[in-house]
Image 1 (cartoon, rainbow, N blue to C red):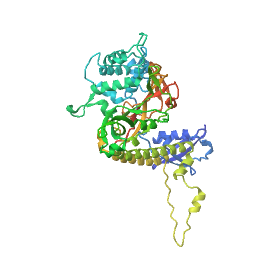
Image 2 (cartoon, rainbow, N blue to C red):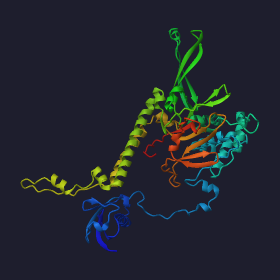
Image 3 (cartoon, rainbow, N blue to C red):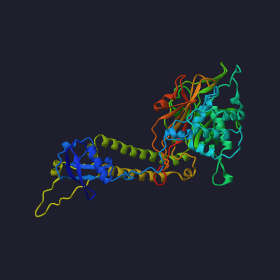
Image 4 (tube, rainbow, N blue to C red):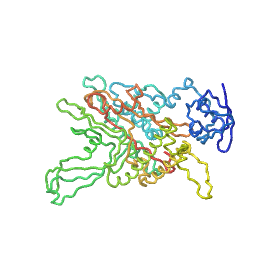
Length: 548
């Protein structure tokens, strides 16, 4: 191994470094990392006007003994220091079942099927994906009875958090059947329990939780329903008679408000996308008696959303009663749905006015973050081109000659030393701009919505859970659930890392990981698995300091 001793200058200090000419630029950078504390990917080492690449052959750069090399860059957060772990490392083999289940990346627990209970298993898995619901259940101090569905749901979720195996939801199932006897219906031949509709299970569970699960609003007298706060939406509707005679006789349109726990997607022959079905569901034709006409007349009820919850349930109305066969038949039509849903257009003018500035700023910030990420990838693929794109690469000798100004008279040309930004410094500037934009975004949030912790403040939702049905009718077939994986939470800082975009597929007690493309394929179009219920969550917005 032959070495050449060079001098590296960094932030006013000089370091003697023995360069192994048989190694690569990456090895040299790690030598500098040990001396300066600047991570290799944050270094900018200049050799003869160009930046040193990781794969550069050090024997071909023409180094001379004692040569001065310039290095720029600052250490990242933490300075790359190696710190001894404060806690003793514990291996999975030495953990209890509960400890292993709570480790980052652990496979969540499944639920055993007790004969046609897949409708319930899938519903419970998607509801469990709501962290606020889990927290509220842990604090539930209501009726402690084997027949209380709320306390049994709390116990079930607690058991599920301590295992990776499929467990039997028997106690909750029994409590549900007592509270809602429809779920205790038997098969026509009397053998076993009948299959049920997952949407009915979802609605009845929410109804029960709405009555029992209360959360404090600061004043005990003002305890609010958890479900109303986090999952309840409000519609403002206008009912108007379609017949001109009613209007001429002085009948005025009637405005009303109603609270709902889901948004329906009506499916007809023209419904191709979720938006089409929502539009259909917000306009309804009614037959009722007109007081001024003194007879039955046709009315149109037009609704708009006046309050958006943090968690929005969307129900695909795929089942209808088919008289000929005396059972619920299924609409097989393919209806696509987005991973991100913008519902601003369905809102009242007042709510739209509050949401649009925030929604538009969110998109602006996302574009800036996307541009930074794209520039980072471009620099990684070709560092030199990346530097030229930023304008921070030293100009060539040809460019310098072109820009030189000849001295006139007795003037003496002043030569100033050029300074260049490192990749890290350039990116830090861009990140600062994004942080400022996020702080501005926070100031745009409507103050009334900001006070409502359970409301959506931007009108944008991200898909978090899907309940699917396979088969031709609600009384048969099979239900499963998909839940999006969350990022890994740092046990020290509490910060949640980036998500990998994958999903958990809950098929009763079988749990597996699937790609996001699988969710797109749940649009329907046959008897295969098609989405029946979607659970959307309001996108997270930055806090006052610009952090998420």
